[in-house]
Image (cartoon, rainbow, N blue to C red; front, side):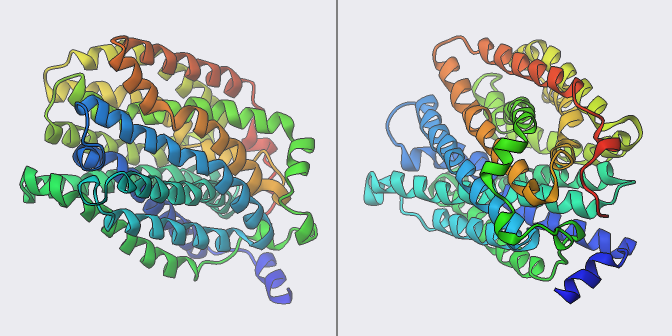
Length: 435
């Protein structure tokens, strides 16, 4: 304890702070790479696990398993949130990445329906449940760790790297797919090439696990005086912070639904609705995501100047009004450049939420329940809105009323904008007391 106290009291150097941010970011990138590898390659492996029906029916079934992975996220958020508040943010991060490693390697070696029948489908489901457990815990631990390490003056900027690496994981997954599309034949990619991204993810997770065991713990955790057994208590969270829990659920509903609509579903939307080839759709999204990723630190920096609540409210409101007309235009786009530009409008709006969401949520809670408070309501809202986004979109498409999905996304974003506008200015009222 004496060593921890000395560490907590000594001011952090700029190098130490940057090292911690980058170390925490690396785990986040790998976690989200592994998570999105499923979505980016599902166009190729869907028929391997669900051979019956047309392409839309196969995608509907893989989307259902994608949604099922979200069911484990609240459980992972609850368990890992408690663990992070009691054992430390760094310890929780290493456990989360180890679980994701396990899930990725499992998918990489999983037999197909043609080899073991329906057991293949159950195996795919089991692997996604393990990944959901991991990711549910990763978000809260990562958001808390990076926000506590960021420092008061530039907290918006540094904590924005949490979403930068989240998008970076998706970019990496798509770039891996682009490389495979240009080096393997369509037959090989459909037969076995789709396994390669999952194997890469498992290997990256091993590297990051080693890196994270060498990270420093945060001062906020080390200086927390509440007894370990009294930290991360669910009853305390619900009893003392019901308003904050509700705020995070609404904001996450808006942010996660629109994120999955604009990114993971958009790749399929470009192929199945707008009529682009799989390779073109993947290339468009890779370009969009690279720029989307680079925007985050700029918006985070802006939030340090104008206020995080303002950045979030404006971004969600703009996205709420833009979703229907822009997605309608994308559905009729014939040129890749036009589709790229239209999608950029949507992700630019979403950046108002994305860049600051982690720090805003972390700043609402005291250290003793911060990781749990960020994790649990976020994961619950993700199950209801983010995890079902693709399934709802595919179901409405199958029912020939796809445009209702655009309306649904827009309305939920506008609800989030109203809540964001009513937030206190966390730049001034942050409960993160130690830098």
